[in-house]
Length: 471
Ligand code: ADP
Ligand code: MG
Image 1 (cartoon, rainbow, N blue to C red):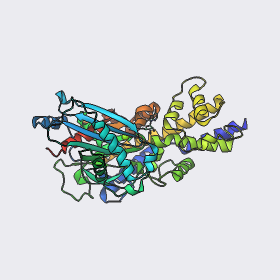
Image 2 (cartoon, rainbow, N blue to C red):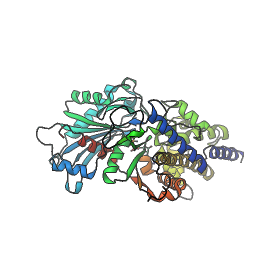
Image 3 (cartoon, helix red, strand yellow):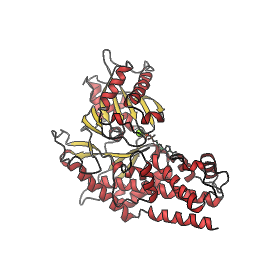
Image 4 (cartoon, rainbow, N blue to C red):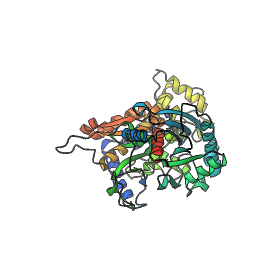
């Protein structure tokens, strides 16, 4: 009937506008590389902040052996404030064969806290941490007379003043707490810990990408970059210190510096933006910012699908004569639900039918409707996955690891990947990997994507350890 023809037309146009042919992805990768240069050249030189992490030495197994020899092995805490979850962990370093014993606890962040006040947020964090510390068992050892030390993973843009301090530049994802902007987040956490009577010192403040890079490098010396695909998206990589013109300080001994790209804020005329993306951006907490993130990450993919469905409902009476009221609620269609629909293999798309009923209160959906919903999910996820692959190629290009070098054996490049989207959205992950192979050609044999499960927590604890006040 006519209604399906209109829906099909909207779908075809979506597909066309979201298309990411190889040539376009190469332009995106090149633009990423160009912006990396610009962001490293001068402060504010690019939408890519290319933040200096003050991590100029990544922990290795050898280093942890040294702690042991010096009898510096011990207990360290890590805290990870992401986009949706908040996690606390403790690790015991210096075990046999560099084994790391760990325990953790995870709580979801109450949504009202994300737009509350600085004190409310940090009090919540400090209270959760204090509760966790109270459960420390006898199998974890804090040497007598020592203060507990913490690596703080904070997944928002921070201008670091040192490894253990930094001011919040802006919020991203679902957070907007105005009074925290410009404050030293370590100072705020420390004050909150004092308020709840917790004696602990923050010895490292790291972005989750930097933590993942540190954790990844610890278990694999070929790790050169880390990418997060979770609620948001971001990347960090190891840069040669002399390739950072804006760095005013002394060149680190290692000659290297980890850069937190804040790639979520990347923007380029080559990005395939649609009218749906403009709507999403305009209605977001941070219009005009984080455009790359809004095309790729878990917070937004389901929302893009919802916005497309809104247009279909209005223009093609996709759900019948009335528009389902639930459909107009922002973020009601979450990326995990989108993923479940996208992976539905049942002949009558049962899962899609159930999700439409449970989430949007569409009681009866025919197979044609369900197929179109799956097609929308596929277009939106494919675009995001292919753009993430292009971003990784941009980093490899910057590192001159994207093409074989004449007369040299190709070096292995391992990218540590983490985040709920990468971990759970199988089609997204597989499409991203396939696209990387497509873009890299023969070099793809020496580029490895490694899932670094919770590497950021371990990485933050390792960085806290290597900057311990007792070393
Ligand atoms: P954060 O990014 O908040 O630190 P995670 O790395 O755990 O936390 O990522 C959580 C995000 O991963 C969720 O917001 C969601 O978008 C995405 N996600 C979680 N589970 C799934 C799933 N099954 N399918 C697709 N995306 C998922
Ligand atoms: Mg995270």
